Image (tube, rainbow, N blue to C red; front, side):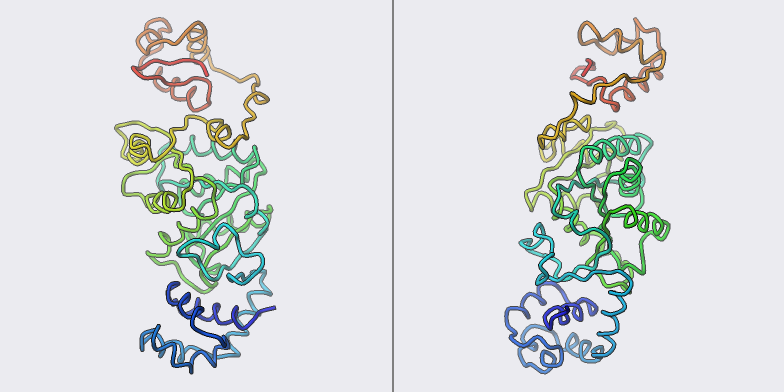
Length: 358
């Protein structure tokens, strides 16, 4: 049942009235029927004359009711801050969205949610790391949250679905304008496989440059923590990181090549102490008391060179030079093998180019 307050907030969301002004209207008004509000002199103290004119020109009671009815018929659930199932993780945020439009299983928001975000153009290393972490964390029961964009977002959602996990996509547009459009099928699959997609924008709202940074506050808000597998210093991931810090969320980052621009943000966050350095999914699972590493010790398949390295590390930590000399593996191939073993969680890189088994 849509109340007058709900209907009023839905109307404002269609007209892009700023959240702060909407909150002020909620504090000052007593009658929330749209007709009454538009004739109440209080609104002149809060909204500009242009905004008031825009609202009055746009308001059509029958059209608004038709929009609400069409959304309900198409499977879109509308939540406002007055709805009993509005996410508790968002209700106290300083810039909370007052209306949410959702498709899928809203109960996922009451489970432990964990965000994976990063660059839209990951390297092969970033792709491998994201898949590894998303799969293991999802298999361990975490709900994986991301933004359904290119790159790390897309990989995290896909990897989670591949292992039968649950994922939440928070988008910066309306449902009629999934961005990028190439992820429309992925969005449908998320819902079909028991996941959730939601947004603060009504279905007809097209993506704009500012909507994605704003979307990131919701990504951080619903998540217990965030992982950044790979991101540059100018990445939009910076916004998610800042919101996570503001909201007191846990931040994890995967170290990368110091010569790669795509790892500048992750390495910088680790160096500054703003993020926990994580080398394998078990680091995160241990942090939350969800470590299943003991039951996950299974036989792993190693190629000939990888087995050489593991055998050389059985006795004690070894240096890169020692491994190169005794394994007889070419240096460029040795680097590849060490990185692969590290990503798989079989070895750990130590200071001074030393390596040991995990």
